[in-house]
Image (cartoon, rainbow, N blue to C red; front, side, top):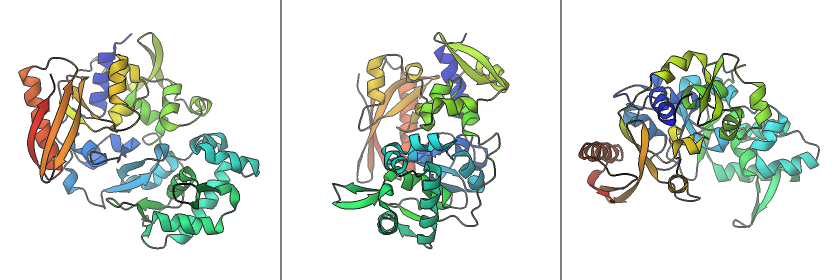
Length: 363
């Protein structure tokens, strides 16, 4: 039996949130992907793990639509194995991942994986140079048959369903150009999907390594995959542990690390940091009121991590070249905690090329 503090401290260490410096090559979260949503997205996730994100170039990192259709950063050198790792496990899995887009395809007798391949082939033919997403979508709508398309009321136009578009992009060997809005797609140079991802990039093993201990249901929730597909790929080299009365699995090689896990690091985690993506939310935030603060329907805050636990939320407020960080603690903060949070806010301001105007603590 292990308690939640051990679990969280294990994840802090596994995700390298307690280290002072590192490089993309030795940053573990890039095996599973660092979600790049919002101004404090993928590169801030690297920065809080000791990576000088400003020094990372396009030769180091690649931005892809992958898990849950969200943009994620990976090492460019790994792109072929990542493409193999994020493929749906089955036709049923592919159908679940594309949500409502699956229904018209099934009704037309079109297999979901076959549909993704069809979209990918056409996308690759269209994107011969950097191409804005809307242009790609418009050209696809001109050539694909009705089961692939939907009428978009806000636009007053017919488009390809969003999730097949996003999930087909990697299959087509396309990456996202960082910093573009609307997104600009371009071909990945010398792209070749690997035959298999290997253990390091296998998404089930990577989840257990970085967000374990976990259940198949939790991993499936992270991937938007059917539980039975995850269970069919569950590793054999796991041990069972009990967390809050629930039996979960941990890679056997990590058993000693879980037992000895400790952490004293303070970090300002971005709203979509991998640490907050774990599907055992009650472990991260046992009090329902705190869970609602962390994961509102709209406008997620960041989370304050200290001493192996989440101790509050934070929100940035930028005015010109000045950045203010508003912190909502969940407990009375010591002077040492306040200093550590302020140091991390200074780090955030520098990351954003801004000057810290101040940290506002709500007592």
